[in-house]
Image (cartoon, rainbow, N blue to C red; front, top):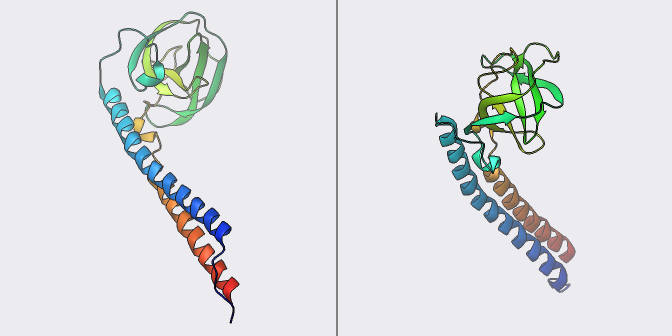
Length: 185
């Protein structure tokens, strides 16, 4: 009968991997609380009818807040698929300005619109190359209103990620036990 010895190095490697996966799962649970607090802040900002008095220094810290903005020079124009305030599919028209991209409004077609820039009011929403854009409210350039940016569309997957890490840890343990049993046969 063969001796049932547990290999030291593989056991240390597997134990370290399992501990790391459990640690990542616990970390994701912590991130869940942080994300829920962030989403609550976004909801409060979106429901606040008061507009900021000036465009903020840190727009990403002010997502879903209403703000004034001045587009000193209208730049590159683009149309992407989007929805209007009545939830109809169509195109949102975006123009680049120094400091931010501006979503001018919505139309059924992608045809280019003309807008020379100027002062506007809108909501700071996620998206764009800088991580945010200004959604004009009221819409500009004769366009219809866009769908209002909604903080509830921000994903919060941290509980699922935590579950995945715990599952991976359990899977690694089961696979290692099965490998040991096979070795001992």
